[in-house]
Length: 253
Ligand code: ADP
Ligand code: MG
Image 1 (spheres, protein in one colour):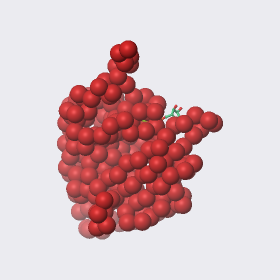
Image 2 (tube, helix red, strand yellow):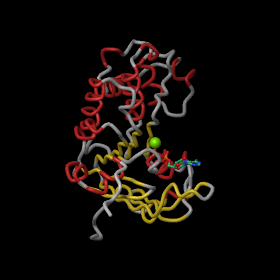
Image 3 (cartoon, protein in one colour):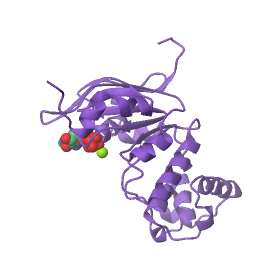
Image 4 (cartoon, protein in one colour):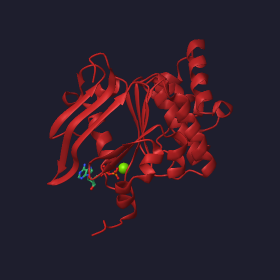
């Protein structure tokens, strides 16, 4: 790698065991700034564990995890890592169901200020513009006054993505966004994520191969806590080792 090349994220030879079980094993992965990377792999491959390590939820037993030029994430706690601009979307949506869609984004923009003090303060015109900008990205600008609890599962997922976007993350980590969505919602989620490419660096973990094909640029396949292969989606789908892992096919001889 040339000296001038800048990765937004770098994992090198990362290992993590849980009571003797190797969830992550010599995991090495580099991500470019602005990249949209899809990570696939069978259940238990270590995909969510990898996000736990990046976000500081767990610490590696060994190996390097660096963000930007030279920030060592293994030395920082979850809150600090979040402050650097790394945001994670968990599988299940967590929005304020009793507040409106608008208020949800507003609350997120305010960061650590309390719900009470936010909702009893005034929205400045700049804030309102920013909130609507985010609402447009997640296609919920027409539902600004809806209670979040009244949204469909897919819309709640978009709202939560919007809440993360409000904080303008450098790196967005999205774990199985299409789970439980209708085909139409899944497709719209793909368009939403594609629209973020270049503006944020994004890791998307996903199972749904139709969805993966829709958004895929470079795909990384994880298996047993390590990278099995990496490349274009067609190459991945034609890769014999990937087929073995997914189809559970035994090697000949
Ligand atoms: P994936 O997201 O690819 O389905 P996970 O990363 O959730 O896989 O899990 C990989 C393996 O690591 C699983 O066998 C899981 O049980 C184990 N694991 C993950 N996190 C923990 C933890 N905090 N404690 C114990 N075992 C864990
Ligand atoms: Mg998982």
